Image (cartoon, rainbow, N blue to C red; front, side):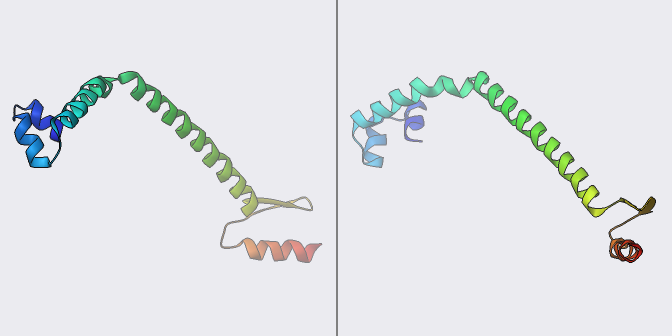
Length: 104
């Protein structure tokens, strides 16, 4: 904000007195600000960041898919026990497990 005030036309002396800094400190900050100002328009970094985020997003979607399949298998959506198939949902899974256990 201090450097921007000077860029807007406020006198450097007023800015420095108001903030309790020396004029040399103001000019140092101004020079640093101006030397890094072009980085605000650097689209290559934004593109690299976006590409990295998109890769990470795809990786996470793949992991979610794998975990979903694993969860469905563990819940036993289709169980095979002694040549018979039984459809299992979350609500009747314990019942089907007891039946399969009784048959063995």
